[in-house]
Image (cartoon, rainbow, N blue to C red; front, side, top):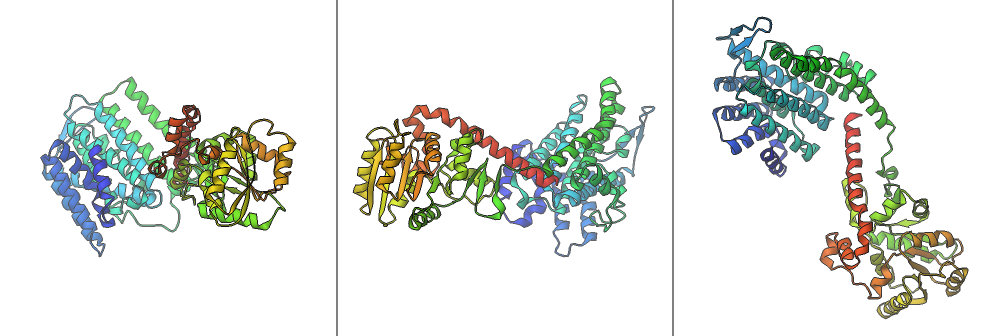
Length: 565
């Protein structure tokens, strides 16, 4: 399995035309790990013939069928063919002579074309749903193989796990490397070959009537491989299409349910006929009602996703991105700086509020109305944390740059515009020290006043002092959520052009707390440096793994919704 995933990762670096050769990954990986035996070599040659037939620019159907026929002959030549069947009623064996090769070719052709048909119905628009359907079928097949201890089925195990590894690899690689129709035909060939190696040669004749690949779909659609192309389209929706839309609500999911249901019924029937017993009979009976419960669960899932409101999304195609209820309005530090400087220029008609929440603040805002209302009231909200930028990249949101509070302060102060700023927050003496360093480093900046962030900060006297100083920008550094509470309660009384929450930035500006080295900041490790300096911060850091799980969960639901609806 690991070998398949490694090869698929390498394939991602090559050109798209190699996608038709993807099924070759399965036997080659097994051969590299366990040796290139005759069956493995035969399967490699067979899949190469199938890929070569579909690689023609003319897309000749005759050439494709001829290559598939030759591939089936090669596979039968190495010894894996239907040589006999066992009659279920009397246990007698019926041996084939010259018919063994035609039956093997027909078996490979039917299952190969059936999977190609499933690819046509699902794989082009629902590639992940198609791969997951095959994954469930192969996993069920390996379960049946595991219940046959009296046979040497090591090769079937190896190919089966290689098959699973390949499917998982294709799922991870994403739609840009999804299977082509020719690749799906090769996958079907491998699936049929697995049955020849592990089940058909030693089980009952029933396996020819209810194969593990659900051939009933192409038959019901009048699309059998030898009657017409399995990828032909009908203008009028077929019976199963109408049935899926009516009872499931999703045509693609309905087709997948039928495939899975027929596969389960076929596999449990094979096991019951070979080894009758209570367990086998119970599983067979359960498989008969399995489609009903699966359809019920699928219809509820479709209903849920039709009314699902994502928690991470881009608002109305604009540059505003929402992450767990917090809307970020600026994706780059220069955008935030320009909007803040415009607010300074407009005057004091309405105080502009700037918030710079990080991951922990976003997660707390979900549970605290104070933070939710505060961030909702803010005119500019910037992502202060690589975790937020990572979440945006996972969900393709327009947040490309971390905008830390201290970086934004430096951008504002270094704008070469004359500014009056007031510093409110931190311990006694820290704001004064930070103000002195700002004055020394930025000639155009005037420190209108400073005040610590402890009591009596709540008093009206502080607000009056700030208004008398008449600052252009008020920096409030009290930490989350104290600064948000203070800003929310007093913003209507303040006469500053802009008020901005900056957390613990005063400690860094004053020099009392060193900032992480540049290489750690560039790699998103500043939080780890802060925990090393202030171990108490590890309590807040507990939100980070929970946040990551939530981001992946939202991505999974978004992908599932796309595949189902």
